[in-house]
Structures are given as structure tokens and as C-alpha cells.
Amino acid sequence: MEESLAITWRRIPERYRLLGTRCITCNGNYFPPRKICPKCRRKGKIENVQFTGKGKIYSFTTIFAPPSGFELEAPYVFAIVELDEGVRVTAQLVDCREEDVKIGSIVRMVFRRIAEDSDEGLLHYGFKFALVR
Amino acid sequence: MIGIVGYGVYVPKYRIKPEEIARVWGEEGERIRKGLGIEEKSVPGIDEDAATLAVEAARNSMAMAGILPEKIGALLVGSESHPYAVKPTATIVAEAVGAGPNIMSADLEFACKAGTSGMQYCMGLVGAGMISYGMAIGTDTSQGRPGDALEYTAGAGAAAYIIGREKTECIAEILATCSYATDTPDFWRRQHAEFPSHGGRFTGIPAYFKHVIASTQLLFEKTNTTAKDYDYIVFHQPNGKFPLEAAKKMGIDEGKLKLGLVTPVIGNTYSGASIIGLANVLDSAKAGEKILVTSFGSGAGSDSFAIEVTDVIESKRGKSPKLADYLVHKEYLDYGLYVKHRKKLKSL
Image (cartoon, rainbow over all chains, first blue to last red; front, side, top):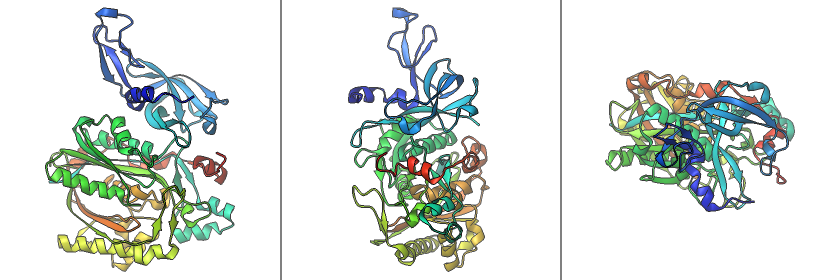
């Protein structure tokens, strides 16, 4: 099912360049961005923070039976990446095979096409990660 | 001073050799490899297109320039493989690098020379004082009809250049630029057509050679220089042979073209081709060295630039990957995987 245009549009900054949020009361970083700090609640103050896109592999697996729209890319490595800012995100790892990857491998954010709605539909872009060699 | 504040390149990881393409179409691979001067060409990943290549090159140029993204006043993306027919690639790139929203942005198309056109427009905007910095990108995942001669050379890559005017920031000064253009039907792609058509041998003398030579000579006249005044010369490179032939016709020492001739190892990256070649020269050039660049876009036209490297380059080098870094880690595809990557099968 196609994502609504408004949701796609609203999420462009976080998807294109990992724009997250930080609570300046407790210094907690959040991704996806939050409007309220779950720790500080009403005492918290949230502001946008640009994550660097650098991190390391926390865990990973290989997807052999992909969801619709990702068939051409299978098999591909899918990972939980711990960013340098402490936040964990899930994303595809590009241009590698499972044997290239280790827990703790250093990765960096790359910009890739994520999905396309149909031949005449919208193209969705966003972050994936690549091994730093 | 108008100059280059930072530049960045990007070339995808995948490669295919002409012998592998020739195997499928019953051609002689070695003859084609030697005839075109192509050892291998780059192929985009399945999830890569002209916009994603442009973003990677743009991020690399930002890393070298060391400027805040919101300082970029214009962002122009030249390509003949923009992902959308209508909807700008430039706004995608601007958002991805954190530039804007107070930014002039537009997509350009002039076959293989839209990247250098963008550089000229940024020079004009910066020179007029309308903006402090402008980013020009040449990016392409170029198309070649299966079995056509273009399939052996059509590669994928991008280069981004940030143009500014502060002497303390410019890694190279752009001393002069000029252009030469005529209506020449050597290569085209109609709307909705998947692959370009071309005039075969007609793409040579009346198109590539006429425009590259005329524009280069115009630059010599404008700057009162000759080829001897330049340490490096970069010509548009649709294959590995044409630039060397153009140099020979002009009596230029072929050795001056070697460093900037990268099509033999990455293919013709169309809008990125001449400026990726320039990047390879800048990756190792020294302060005071002079570079001449002439692009070519079918249809047809050429832009020429006289560039002098400054000593600022030493302090900015190493802040972003060099072209050579993208040539180390590569993976070869067979024709079947290549067809999958380029989505050339209708059922895909």
C-alpha cells in the first residue's frame, strides 16, 4: 500500500539526512524524532539535532524473503546500527554480503532509493548504511 | 576571485567489462576494448540513481568545503537521467545536504555537459554578488540500448563543485570560461524513450571534435594562452580514444591528458565525465599548476575553463574521498546481473 504523500513529505528530513531530536533537559537523543521526551515528560525540552550518520553495527541479519518492493535487492543485509550519538536505527547495509559484516563494524550513512510506488508513482529516498573500509 | 571552494565525486561499486557485454552480443570483446579504450565501466547499484549519486558527491564536496549548508545560495543539478521527468532532482539534493530553503535550485540538461553549465551559472551568480556559494553537480546513470555501441561505455558517476569567491577558501581559481554551441543532431532521446539514439560516426568530427576544439581554441584566444601554459588538460571523454584524438588534432602533448582521462576505468559518466576527470587532477595537483577543462554535450556544445590551483588545496585535501578511493573496492557483474541492475528486462 502506498504511503500518504503528507507522511512521506513530513518524514523527508529524518529519512534523507537523519535529522533527529534531543531533549536539552536530560541530553537524551531520539530517532525517529519525538515531540515529547519520554523521560522528562513536561519538564523536557525537545530540539532538532543533526546526527552525523556515523555508527557501528549492533546486530545484523540477511533478508532472503524480502517484503514487496525489495525483491530485486534480495538477499541483502539488514542491520541495527548504533549511531555515535547513542541512538539505534534499523536500515539496509548496501554493497556488501553477510560475510563482510561483523558486530562492531564501522558504518556511515549513505543516500539511496528506498522504494517506488509504481511506474508513475512517487520515488522514496532515504538513509541506508555502508561499511567504512 | 571566483574559484572552487570544494569538490566531491562519487562512483558506484559495480563494474562490467566490455568483453562480458561483447560475449552476449557476439562481438569481439578485445577489439571493442581496444577500439573504445575502455577497460571497464561503472554500473549503479539497484537502489542508486542520478539523485542518490548526486547526494553522495554533494556531501563529499561539503566535507571538503567546510561550509555550513545553509550558506549555499544556489544548487544546480545537471543530468540526462534525472529520476523524474517533472520534479526537480535539485530539491532532493538540497534537502539531503541540509541546504535551503532559501536557495535557488534547478535541474539542467545538456547531454554530457550540464554539469559544467551549472558551474558557469554558479560563477555568474557568485560573481554578481547574488550568492556567496553555489553548488553545481553533474550526475548520470547513463543509458545505452542493449547491443548498441553505447552500452560498452555508458557508466554511472557524479561530481559536485562548490563555487565561491573568498580567496582564503578557494582551492583553485577559475581564471576564465567560455562556451561554443550549435544545433547539431548527433545524439538525442525523445520524451518517453528509454534509450538514446545517435548518429554513429556523425558523433565524431561534426559534433565532438568540432565543439571541443572550437571551445578550447576560444579559451586560448580569450586568455592569450596556448596548450603549453597548462600542466593538465581534461576533455570530455565519451570513450578512451576521442580526447586523445582531439589533443592530437590540436597538437597537444597527450601526456597532459593522462591524469584527467578516467573513462577507461569508470566508463562515460555523461554529465559527470569531464568534471570527474578534473577531480582526479585536483586530487593530486600542486599550487600554481594550471588546468584546462573542456566539456562536451551532444546537441551540441562545449564549455571550457582555465583553472589555477591555489595553496589552499593542501589544507583541504583528505577531508573527502578521492576518486582513487572509489576505484579500489569494486565488484564485477556478469551481463545477467547487469541487466538486473539497470532494469533492462521489461518484466522487472
